[in-house]
Amino acid sequence: MSPPSLRVRSAIPWVTVAARLGLAGVMIVAGWLKIETPALSVEAVRAYELLPESLATAVGYGLPILEIVIGVLLVVGLLTRISGIISALLMLAFVVGIASAWARGLRIDCGCFGTGGALEAWEEPDYLGTILRDIGLVILGVWIAWFPPGRFALDSALGLTPSRADGVEEENEEDEEKV
Amino acid sequence: MGKGARDHTARERIKAQREAERKQEQRRRVATIATVGVVALAAIGAGWWYAASRSAPETIAQSLAPVTVQADGTAVMAKPGVTKPVVDVYEDFQCPACRQLELTTGSTLKNLAAEGKVKVVFHPITIFPEQLNNGITRGNSVRAGAALRCVSDGGQWLALHDKLFKEQPSEGTEGFKLPDIVAWGKDVGVTSPDFESCVTSQKHLQAHLDYGAKVKIGATPTLKLDGKEVDNPVAFDPAALRELVTNAGK
Image (cartoon, rainbow over all chains, first blue to last red; front, side, top):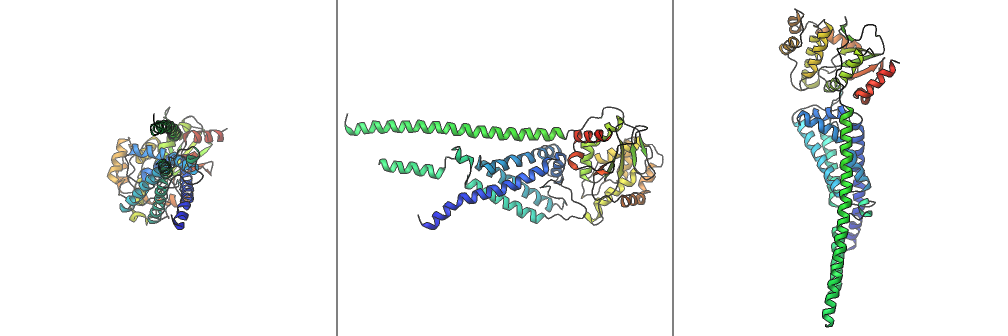
C-alpha cells in the first residue's frame, strides 16, 4: 500500500463526518422551521401541484419530523448508511419537484425552509440555485451511504458496523495464518 | 488418533465456537439496529400525528354570529354588543396560504365569534402585483374581491367568501371567471337582484383596489389581534389561536 493512498483512506472517515454534520445541519434547520406551522408545510407541498390533496397533506405533516429525525441520526452517526440513503433520496425528490415546478412555469418558493410555498409579491424564485444546492446535498448523502459511518459515530461504538472491509481482511489474515 | 487428526478436531471446535460467537454477535447487531429503527419510526409517527392533530380544524358547533357588510367592503362577524377583542383578517382569495388559513383556523374564528368572544373583521384585498404571471394571478384575485362587494347581506357575503376559497384556482391559470362566480353566488343563496350584473360589469373593481392600496398590508394572510400581528404558528394552530383570543378578551 502506497503512502498517498493510505493517507487518502484515513481521510475518508473525516470527510464522512463532515458530510454528516453538513447534511444534518441543513435537514434539522429545514425541519425545525417547518414543524412549527404544519398547515403551511402542507401548503408548501401542495404548491408543487404534484401530489393529490390527501397525499400532499400527509407529506406536509410528515416531512418536517422526518427531516429532523434523519438529521439527528446523521449527527450521532446511528444507522448511518440507511440515513445517508434516505437523505439522498429525499434531496433527489426535492430536485425533481423543483425542476418540475420550474419546467411547468410555476412560480413558487421551494418551501424548503418553511415559508409555505408562496412568494412575497416582489420575490423571484431561484430555481437553479435551489436545485444546485440540493444536488450538493444529494452528493453528501451518497458519500455518507458509500463510506459510513465516519468518525464519532454511535454505529461504531455500538458495533453496528460489520465493517465490510476490516472484517473481511481480519478473517483473511487469520485464514492465512492457519494455512 | 494421529496428530493431524487431533489438530483437525481442535480446529473444527475452534471454528464452530467462532461461528457461534459470530452468530450471537450478528443477532445482537440485528436487535440493536431493529430497536433504533423502531424508535426512529415511532418518533416520526408521533411527530406526524402531533402535526396533524395540531392543525385539525374545529368543527362549527353552533349557528354563526351575525355578519354585517361595511361601507368600505369589509365585513364584521360578531355577536351584538361584542366590540373587543378585534381580530382583523387580511386575505386574498387567490392566495394559497389564505385558503389554508381559512381551512385551518377559519372555523375557530367563526366559533369564537359565535361564542361572543371576539369581533372578527374580514378584509378581502388583492396582494398580487401585475407583473406576476402576466397579471393572471392578480386578475383572478381582483375578480373575486370585486364580486364579493356585490353582496350586501352579511350571511350571504360569508357564504360566498367561503365558497371562493373553496373554489380557488391555481395561481398560474385563469380562474374565478365571472360566470362561475355568478353561479357560485346562486349556489350559496345570494339573493340580490342585481348580483349578476354587478359581478359581470365588475362594478366594484376600483373600490376593491383602492381599499387594498389603503390598508398597506405587505403579505397575506395577515391576522391581527387588536392591531398586533399574530405569528403564523399561532394563526395556523386552532387551539393556540383560540387561547390567544380568549386571553385577550379577559
